[in-house]
Amino acid sequence: MVLSPRRDFVMGPEKYAEQKDIGDLRKEDPCLLKEDPCLLKEDPCLLFFKQNAPALIGAALILQICFLGTICFLTATTQQLDAALLFLSLLAKTVFLTLLLYGTGWCVENRGWRVAYTRKIIHVAFFAVPFWFDAHMPLSEEESVIWALWNINMVGWILLLITKPVRRLIPIVQTMYASSDRPEDKGLSQIYAWIQIPLSIVIIGGFSVVLRVMGAAKWTMIPILAVAIGDGLAEPVAVFWEDRKWFGGTHKYRTFGLFSGDRVFTRSIEGSGTVFVGTLVSVLIYLKTMSDGQLIFFVCVLPIVITILEMVAPHSLDNPFLLFFGYLMTCSAALI
Image 1 (tube, one colour):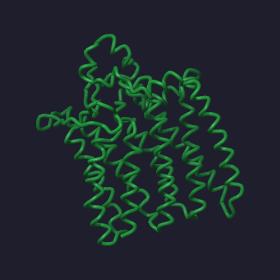
Image 2 (cartoon, helix red, strand yellow; image 1 turned 90 degrees about the vertical axis):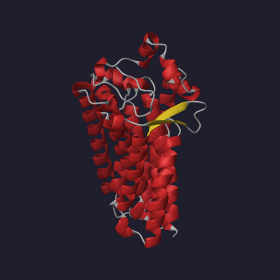
Image 3 (cartoon, rainbow, N blue to C red; image 1 turned 90 degrees about the horizontal axis):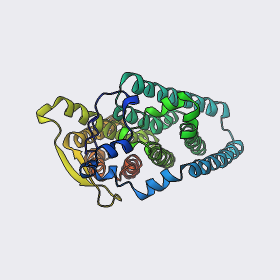
Image 4 (cartoon, rainbow, N blue to C red; image 1 turned 45 degrees about the horizontal axis):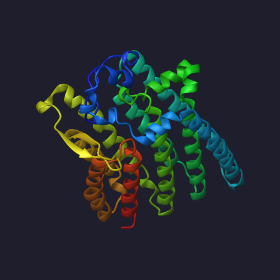
């Protein structure tokens, strides 16, 4: 196995079952500390989550049940809400995301797919699919809030499904978890997911309502696509580029992550270029829905802002971080 200190992680094509836990790697090669301090110097907050996982899972379960009760009450008291359509959509989303988790996990375990690729597919799907679906529904402002809350609750239940106690009992769930369990994150992968995915869902849900109120619901998907295409493809493109040694391989540079202390991260010009191009493409998809002023603002501001922010995004919080500022830029464009 080859560990790269850069964020665009490159790993040999061995199967998931043969990959070693990061704790074992530390014992075998203490010099990993010199190459990547974050491997041995874990974030105190993440370490707290890891050490208190059972209590936190129990608390999350209680909160999910309370949240579910609250949403059921709001749904029952909302007039003219098509409950049948709502629950059919939830069923379709849940089935799709569950099958996607299992399918990509199976490919990791049995086909040697790189988790660097599959985890991006999963992260993007979890916060893009529910709201892409909702964006095409004829919902009122009040209904869009209810649907967004149900999306958040649905994702929470799926994340509870893949917790360690359940994985130990049900092998299929372990396969689902394999789709996003990077070797260098062993023991922390689910914590990263619990931080990133729900927070991303909350940001998307909140801003989707704001944009609907501003009459710009048609742009709800722009920040999502910017993260999905730009940030989502940055790592795979960098890995692909490095593997083939085009123009001497990836060209790396070092940067600090916000709220990451003195830890230094390594990015690649190819990865950052992918973020820029991907964000630009996400804007151009909606070209016909913009005025000239809005188009100029989007093209000149959003790709540059997202690319710069991706360079310094907090470790394990890059998706919600980029989504938040992407939506701020989108709301600003709606005012032009």
